[in-house]
Length: 375
Image (tube, rainbow, N blue to C red; front, side, top):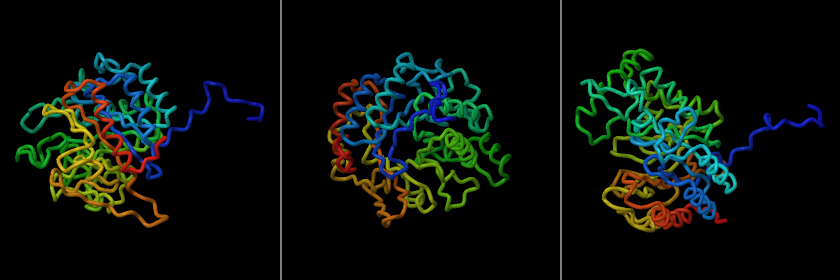
């Protein structure tokens, strides 16, 4: 190309993504559950402006949930709720975030919480060893299931350009308190059979999960996106699972249910980078039991008095914490930052305006603790 030549609009280089803070260990995020609750585009745009004022770096959009898809994803418009964002509303949010300097991180939550995504694809729902259907779980042993997940990932990436993308990945297998049947290692025979077909007789359902997540992560990287993943089913690489989750994936650490389940230290010792989404201290939840108390008050006290940027959950609901020490000067920091989460388990207990008004009493102390520079 000669100096006088210019790129045509059709071939113009896309703008660089808004920095999320992940690549510089300066992430101050907010996760918003727009899968369960129908937040308006105008409301989210106003929230983005407020986040920018407080020094946040990123808004993580949890776009899909068991009963609802909150946006008309290109190619999957038929799955969206009637009150979901359309393409024009999504574009307004993208433009507002770019203007405000807030990175957007979309999440399609798979392979669990997938009921709404599987409407019309019921043959991809997972069955257990008794033949019982689990309509909110994707049967990741099936090639078509992976094809669907990759297409959804690409649709979200196209609609919400940026530096990172969240793969979801939470609550697919039984939680530690569930009964013996739920914990059975061959509860889902198709997953076990798939893993053994790929890896040999010692493989487990967790290996099927890891194969699936690694395929999504590889596609995210091809798209130029940093993949993130909830920590629920990540076996630390130091434990030498048959298939470790790729270390290119940023582990979003929200929970540690039991002392024998992995801690943030296990992930760090295995070479993973992490984000702190402490589920005891940073979860703003609209639930059937009521609404959050103001100022980040949870059972252990006010957010500003209990949280620190490197304070991860030690044990769930036990007022037990793990404080990760800072790295020596000049070394890359594997703790990339922290994020508050807004969950709408009972979306109608507060209206949108009331939700954002109450949320602001959490955003302010969180930003202060994170040392986020105000604008």
